[in-house]
Length: 137
Image (cartoon, rainbow, N blue to C red; front, side, top):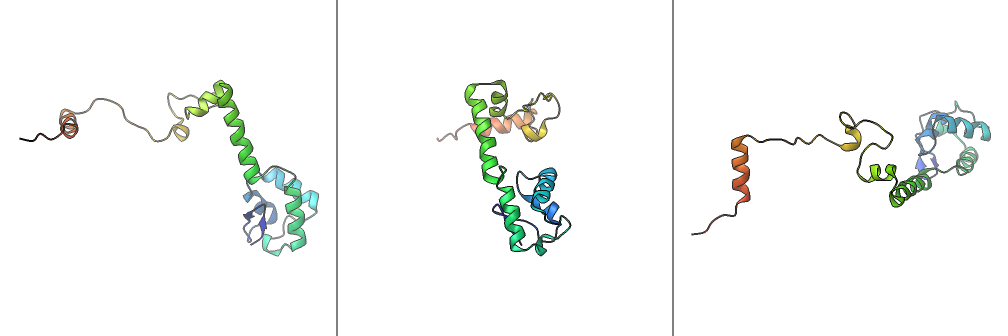
């Protein structure tokens, strides 16, 4: 299993597809890297020579990927929060940032639904009893 940029890329996949398992390398960037290095994109990752792996790693190192890219994104979000921008406040409140509606949908960002409303009389009574401290006589 070849290792590029600290990531084990799947050995059974084509090189072009296997490179997309690296964070920050999508299909377009993978094609750019392969064309720049001259590696056959149809070759399986397990069949790559150590020289080809080294060429791919050097070419990918020119772009931000993995930890560097994640740090860059995190720093950008922190900067938005620090300057008090609208987008930064949306990030800090775990709400959609790019203008999506929140009256319905936005479940991915906001999480599971929490029902807020009236309780039935029996449930309210049980809840009140559990909150009261036990009386000693």
